[in-house]
Each structure stands twice: as C-alpha cells, then as structure tokens.
Image 1 (tube, one colour):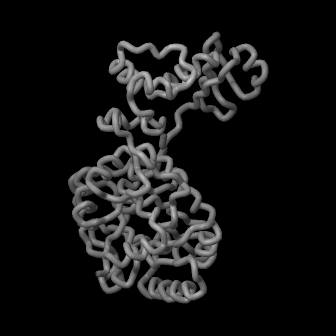
Image 2: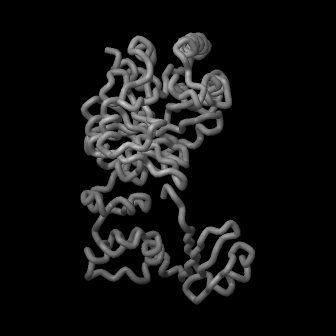
Image 3: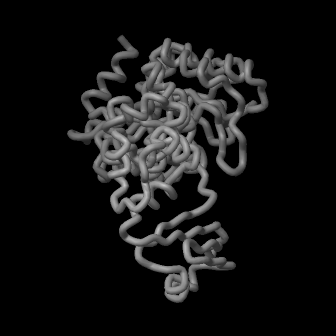
Length: 366
C-alpha cells in the first residue's frame, strides 16, 4: 500500500507464549491470547501476529492477507465450499474453480469484475525496466553531475537514461534558462559519443503554468527528445480549472509524459483535485504517457487509476524522479504500486529496450 498503517504477520507452528518469550524485545504494549498478539514495534507501528497450525496455513494466509471486503465477497460467491483446514492457499482457488489471484491484486479486484476470472498476467517486475526516465542533475537541483548520473545508470545495467532537469519557471529548483538547456544538450551529444551500448536522451521537466502552457518556446522544446510536463506551483485550483490546466498541457504537441499528475506528497500534502477520467482520456487522445512517480513520497498517479489507463490504451512510465544517483533505485516502489493496479510489462513505457525506446522518441517528431 502507498501508506503502511500496520504490520501483520502469520506464524506457523508457534503459540503466543513461546513466541513472546523468544521475541519480547520486538513488541511493546503486547496483548495476547492463543490466536494472536497485538502490540507495537519499537518504532511505534501497530503489529498483529497471528498463529496457526501447519494444516491450516492456507486458510489463515488467505483470511489474513485480505482485504476484508474481498474475503467477504469471495466467501459469498462460494457459499457451499468450506475453506477451513487447508494447508496450501492455492487449493482455495482450485476448490472455487477460479484462477489464483496474486495478493497484490486483491485490493483492486472489487472495482475490476473481469479480474475474478481473468486477472492480469505478466505483471510488471523491477527487472523488466530497461531505462531510467525523469531524472535531475546539478544543472538544476540534483546532487550529481549529468555524467555521474548517466555513468551510474549504465553501470547499474540499464540501457538508457532520460535527463529531465527543472525548467526555467522552477526558480526554486535552479530551473534551466534556455542557454543552460542548450548547453546541456551539447554535453549530452558529446557524452553519447563515448557510449556504444547506452544512450542519454535529452529532456526537461517543464512546468505547467497556471493556464496550461509550457514554459519554453516551441523552438526550444522541439530540440528535446522527451518533455515531461508537471505542475509544481499554484496548487489551489478547483477541480474544473485544475483539470483544464492539465488537459491544455497534455494537448501541447511537445508533451510526451504527464508527470506526477496530482502533485501529492504522501503524509504531508493532498493531491490537487483533478478529474482523473478526463485527464486520462486526454492522454489517450494525444498519445501522452502518464507517469507513476516512484518517489515513495509520491507514488503518483495512484495505482487505483491504472486499470482505467489500461482500458484507454494509455501507457505508464515508472520514473524515479531521481535527484541523486542511488535514488534511481526508487523505481522498485513505483513497480510495486503499479502491480497493485495490474500494470503489465507490455503497458509500461520503459520496459522498451534502447532500440524500441528510440523509435518511441522519434515517433513524436515524425
């Protein structure tokens, strides 16, 4: 889940007394009975530890994995079947004559009726990602130079790297004036001469202005490989104005990717209100990709909208929004969030290899 509220564990072949005796130092304020222990971790998170015998592992794993609404509906659909004392969770699905449902999909199934019989296959995995899109360097507010970022991405086994420093309106992030952006493009050309199995693509994270315009002239934007359009300021708009603003940016011919669509910061800032369906529809009409921003404080677009993106044929790009080298590995959080929405390898932009991604870049220019 994007926000973790508690931790639940299922322990097989133990009982509460012996478990507490062995692990008393990891639980605070523990309350116990023969079936579970409730307490807090040493850093304050609620923990529930359940216990079961080996012969009921499958039943208990299914029950406690949840979510409760899914379990209740599953039982309602299979009233005449007993799911007690099953040692292998997969047998629950065999008995109900339904495909095994990956636990990561169980939160979303109630809004996706087809998943009961045809759950998504080939879910996106971290190892499917071939390139790192949406990154920052010392040209704007990043910690490492363009070369340091690119070399690290290459040494981490990826095939390409898209640099998208902040644009000139983002003065708070040392956004690039036109002369610096052109200088960066020249540096990219020189660096690419030194690579044979890797490529840097030029780009920008262009601020979406209050009226939906991007903050460079077309003659500048047209020199870039990838334009990520994002909102960073003037966040207090009503839903109609905020939606219209995004759609205007999506319709700009240079826009390739819509970055963190709601601008939310988990635990600290609500996303600004948008009509997600209208925004996704606009992306479908204009062949614009939507970002799952993999920064664990964002995870935006929310996973619950990925099935609608899939329905409308809108691809997702899982991007780390990296401001330093090691932050590229935040990509895993975006993958995990995207899995919950049933994102498949084929519907993710940056599962493309270098040749395929290069063709995608060129497709907008032709």
